[in-house]
Image (cartoon, rainbow, N blue to C red; front, side, top):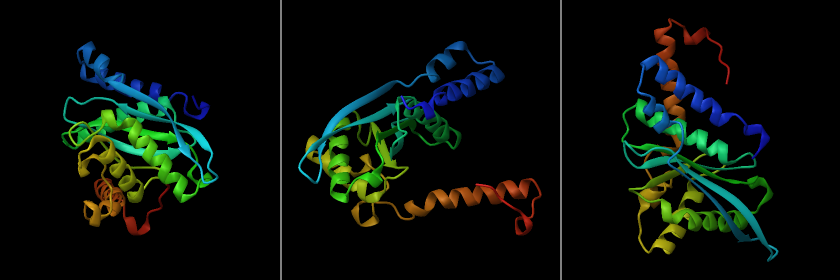
Length: 217
């Protein structure tokens, strides 16, 4: 476990506990929401450009699917670990729920720094990971999306590998793909647009003049 991520899951659980106490919920609500339904850790090999094989570790955490299929991003980062994906999948459940989307939360990733690998190596790593998690993902099961250090091209690689492994073309299994490959219009811009829209709405509610405001990111 990466020491930098110690406590993330504890933070998520404390948030759930506080909310349950404020709502005076049945204790079982906390028990249901405090732990992911399933967490998969995979270890797989990928070929490097020099012909050698290197082993990688990846994860997929599926927090809760009471409202619908799991949904959440995939990230490539040295800090990816079990507790991080558990916490992020937990928060994803509530992100979907608070806006009424019929999905549950999931999250996944591979522990690596993509700057250390060529494009060809990253494709082989991506495909190996997609093959490893293929039994538990799908349009009606768990839908992945780009996240930190991943993009539409990586999603296409993963979808192609998933199709090879399962024998079924299900483009909705991986979102964030280019429009010409079953992607959605404005997908790339959507996150930033949402942030700006919320900032404008919040400023209006708090009577803040954005023309004279300073921000911190």
